[in-house]
Length: 312
Ligand SMILES: [Zn+2]
Ligand SMILES: [Zn+2]
Image (tube, rainbow, N blue to C red; front, side):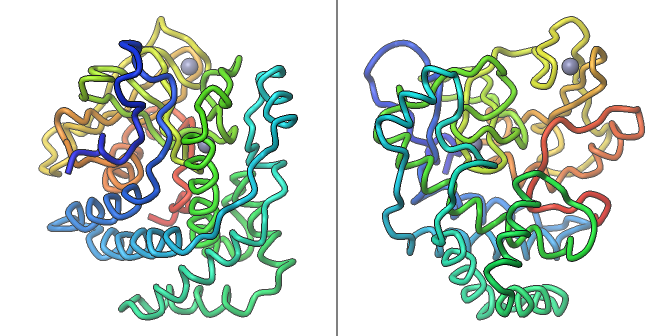
């Protein structure tokens, strides 16, 4: 299945390409899970990618079990639009207990899977953690503070927060994309304010050859013109790197877009070359590319919340 089917492109309303592509919750995580499983075959990090496939499938199951969530009311949406602020801000939105329900569903699904002992240990600790401990871990994820004590728990907490924010973004996106403003800062998600995990060059009729940034938290995509730095807006010193001579099946489809003005980079996935590609899964299957551009002095412009940097 093409990744383009994972997203709710507004059907046939105008010839304008969509500015925002909301996530389709029924398809997104299950397609990502299949992509992780496919990328795991013959990969040096195959066991880890296969586990992430199971984690992502658990996200799918837990998302399917989510109840209807409260969304911002008309006043809050107006305020967000008038101030050019994201309507579901990651760090300030009063998150409901539903994200913790999603976590416990997800851990339940993982529990029945054959998972490594270290993963089982993390799941057991999260299962007995207090509400206050879980909320503190969630705050660390949403500030992208991936260091310090209990850092190995953060990808699981992040996975649960992704379920919750994806459900919110999908509901808001299907209610009307006009509620999602255009921000002054093009490099952050207009729905939740989080940073992008990667960009995607789409190949559908509606969005042919257009580049979208893909949110690391809520899985919303937003349009940004090609050959432009997501971190500093610069256009003058952009270059593209890929791992030469690699036999990874996604190596040619996933490149690093580097910017010499701010010395940052973000990966870019060309779906024409990998129709089943997924920005989160293909990102983690190309950590060698990160090592290459890190060594050349560039810093990554957005996180992959399922990965603790330095642990790969
Ligand atoms: Zn977002
Ligand atoms: Zn830049």
